[in-house]
Length: 406
Image (cartoon, rainbow, N blue to C red; front, top):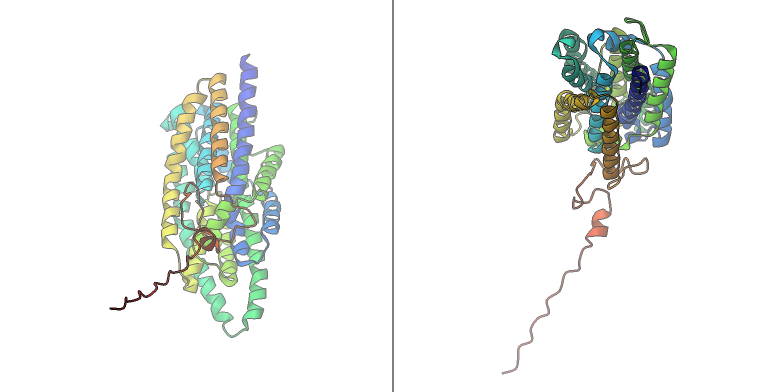
């Protein structure tokens, strides 16, 4: 295979894998916008994912600030190759699918950044990573944004309940359902504006690395359109496992707090996307849901929240480790990339097969707050299963012994 043909094969492969990542980003993060209204019944599950998919697609076409940050800010363009970017995408996809399997709303954005950082360090050296840009555009927003969104959601929830405390619940319930539908739609739009651009930035980066696009330029129109379509299709597929964890796992959501958390989430994400921050919409959305629970004085499942925080902390190094290992294979040329693609397909198939053991769909997404994976002997999850699996046995009545006549 000639050099030019081999390079073109790698570029096309990277673009295809980037779109696969974009698809996983869509179903992994669809819960950020639609878990709340589905949990409260404000929007039906199927309607919610259709609406979210459309708004993700529209949002991805609205701005390119984040895409330009990724394609021209994180790494030294002169040292990045298409195979390195492919390895980073593999790390992001594997981490996304693993956390989806366990119903952990980790950050797809941080999975992408982690995978790319690990691959770049192995393939081009640590000097090619612009550390300060990573800190200022990724790490600091990851700490500040969820706190800001959580505090805003807590105060907004408290204010919503205070204002409507004298209003009959039948009227407030209807009004807040419309409000929650509106704010969740804004979150979906904001998610497309933020996360849809990340794949655009990656594809632009690989085109620049292959000298098919001038350095310092933004994404082309065809890149914008296919990236927007991929994340929209991913959102439409549902991502029901994380939808359950976000909507039921952290706190039982009511419509007023759902509307308040949605407003706080969308405002934070849109502001960050405008500034070009590589923000995690998952972190912001989770912070808002936690804040709304605190604002209402509801019972927050802090054990679930701690598991989510652990997943957040592990995302960057975990995806970086997978991306670095993938870079060792991708650096071997066409045969190494072929082996890497076969391994990726096998991992995806294995994770999908495991997810079928305890399947979650739009029909049962709100039935429980648990996301089961391997636990075949776990206590019953759904209402009524306990009666089916272990019916109550009638107690035996001891008959009195008859005394024999002396």
